[in-house]
Length: 375
Image: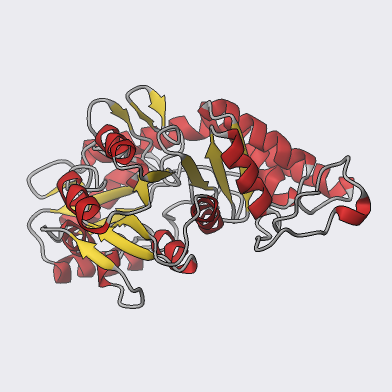
């Protein structure tokens, strides 16, 4: 493919820090560059406690386990999101309660959520900000969680740097999680980060994420270091990937993020008429970051949309479907709450187009010109 959905932006700084890690002789967990990355991303988001892990899925699973998620518990998951969100719930032995999304931003539908809370009395809710667009009902969902004593995990994997009511995403839940896979807002190949403002909860997260070993500090005697208090996970991010992450976060605010926002604005310029629109419409009190640019075909059916996708691929333009609606995945024992199938409509009638920061305005005009042949 000549035009990729997303591609990592690697500079001399990433190479410098990776070489530094290689020369240090230490490639495993707790590397210097990983610790620097954790400090810098915590400062950027203004969230005090942070730990880098090996994937976004590991971050979700660790968040669930640290909140006590287990067999018999119910966890709210939005219908339009990555399968990792539901897989992690199943991994805990809990029951996913899938709630349909609202049409404007593809966040959880508030009225359906109220029905799900009343019927299932969930222990945990996952709030997901899709494609870089802050969820419309964020404030109301936070209030509902507090009212019903529901713990909230805020998944801003696709929206790092986004804001809602002048507050960085990641600050709204009991725990925030963010993927740093190579195609995300910052990327290291595979990785994730877990955040919280609660010191007691963070200590639990850190312990569970490092094999439930309580004696891993520099002052602990060597003969205690591999003692385990029980079930735990080998989830910490290795030094090589932490080195990439450090460089990415140091370049993020001034270089990577502005370019993503510029690409998003160009898509809004060229895909906004009676035939096509951008799939989401951010609310005024939010600041989107345009991780992916999804376009919605107002007048076409799924067969026609798939023909367009095949045509674009033959022209060297990578495309992606929307997320498979979770309620259509039969491999999970879940419950669904939703009066309208917004997720299915988006899946059938939208396409994700290249969103990497190396695109030019001419490239985006070209995509539109090629699509026009079918309209």
